Length: 346
Image: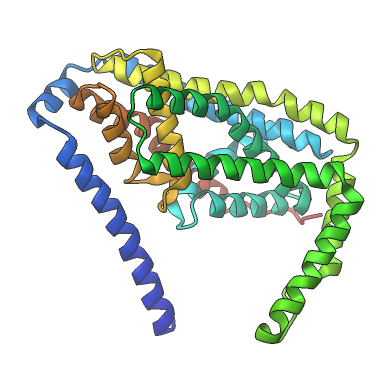
C-alpha cells in the first residue's frame, strides 16, 4: 500500500473517531446523575424492551416489502426470500463502511446484479424505495419542526439540517419526475450536460469525463424499465403506506423504550425526538450518525423536558434495537452468504 493512501486512511479514521468521541463526550457531560441512570436500568421493564426488539426485527420485513414494491415499478420482480437477506446485510454494511448509506446502496446494487438482476433497474428501484421512505418521513419532520418551534428549542444546526434534508428530498423527486415525465427531453438535457462537462473538464483531465453514448443508453434503459408513467406512479404511491408504517413502527419502538424505563412522554415529544434522530442520521458525517445522534438526540430530549437519565437510556436502547442489533444480524447473514457463488448477471 502506498504511503499517501495509508496516510489518507489514517486521517479519515482519526477524523471520524474524533467526531464520534466529541459527541460521546457531550453525551457524557449532559447525562446527569449516573447513579440515577444505573437505578433506571435496574428497574427497567425488560419484557417491554423485548417487544421493542421484535418490532425492530419485524420492521426489516416492512423495509423489504417497500423495496419489493418499488422493484415492481421497473418491471422487475425480486423474490422476498432473496431480497430480505439483502436488506439485513444492508443494515450491517450501512455502518461498517465510511460512505454509510451511499456505500451500502452501491454494495446492494452489486449483490443484486450478481444474482442476475438488471443494473439500472436495481439502482432506480432502490432509489425509488428510498424516496418513498423519505416522502413518508415528511409529516414526521413537519411535526418535529412544529413542536420544536412551539417550544422554542429549534437551534441553528437543526434548522440547517432540516433545510438540507428537504432540499435533498425535492432534488430526488425532481430527478425522478424529470426522467419519467419528460423522457426525450431528459435524454437531450443529459447529453447536453455530459458534453458541457467534457468541454469543461477535458483540458484538465486530458480525457472525457462522461461517456455520453453510455449515458443515453442508461436513460433509454430506465425509460424502458419504467413503462407507462401513470401506472408506475400508482405503484409508487402504493408503497407510501408501507413507508409510513415503517416510521410509525420506529416511533412505537422509541415510545416502548421510554415506557420500559418508567417514562411516558407525550406522543408529540416522542415524534419530535424520533424526527431529530432521523434528521441527524441523514446529515451527520459518520455512518448512520454513530456517536453523533446519540449525543444530540439526548440533548434535544432533555431540552424539551425529558428527564436526563430516561433520555440517555431510552435513546441508546432505541439505537441498539433499530441499528446495532439489525447490523449484528446482518453481519451473520453477510458471512453466511459470502461463500455463495453468484449467478451470471444479465
